[in-house]
Length: 187
Image 1 (cartoon, rainbow, N blue to C red):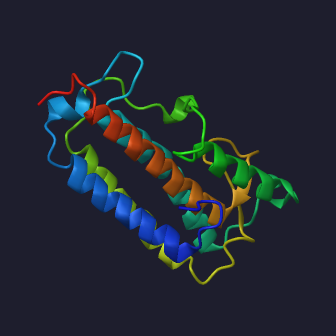
Image 2: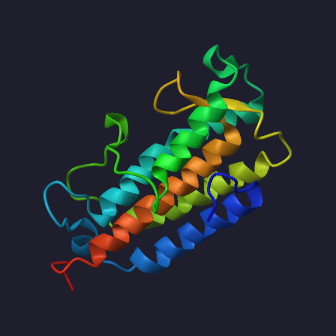
Image 3: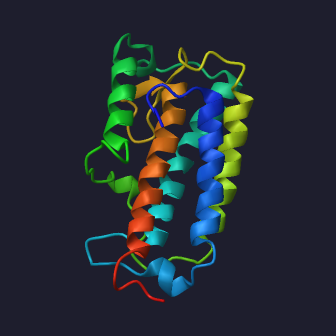
């Protein structure tokens, strides 16, 4: 998929597909399987989805503010930078061409055993996000500049935010798949 240029219908279709694939691929895993880690430094399937739940949660109030017509911040008013930053972020998260990145501290997953409901929670949250995407479909998404949920000085278009969400999910979905393919993964 061309994440850099995906339009809203494509992003919505991809988001729905990721949720369905997550449910079908990981929804029947046991708690032990979901929480199994290939090594101390690597994430479990549950941690991959806990991380997505945490990072995606930060976008919900941002989208709600757009829908409410909340006034833009100083950083959201800066010309040029949002277009560049959004594209760089999308490229860096691409599961095929991207590079390994360390998640910001506020988006690190829980380190202890996570609930086996993590996949259902992800699917539910995804439905909420897709609903918000659809609710903004009438807006000029490329022209609406938002601040990143990580830091307010990083800004990009709302459309790029939607692209970031799905490319990030695709990246961690593939990471979770690799965990289940490890030789020590519990049967």
